[in-house]
Length: 150
Image (cartoon, rainbow, N blue to C red; front, side, top):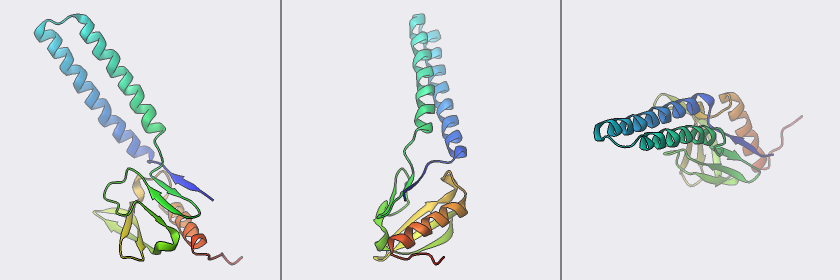
């Protein structure tokens, strides 16, 4: 019973847009230098080829990005979430899970037995908040040895 959650589509699109702007500015600067310094047209051609490759690689990288949150039988692991707190812990080290609003964003906070916390902003995940919280709760209960009554 493993689960993984990647970046949401809206966050990926924002990152891709920012990358497009940065690449466009870089190509524009090269174009300005080519015009100002009378550089050979091959320099501009090279900048366009590198820019196009950067666009493709950025798109592929964002599409194939590693999961931000991974849940398995033994615990959880976070990647690329700065300021989240503890990036990895076992389920038996988790005391409880609560929801909170941090800087206006809905978050899930895992409180560990030693007082440390992990904060996961659910808006950046590719799943509805309720589904993520339910899945997280199931993993936590399974990790603590609780079985649902059926």
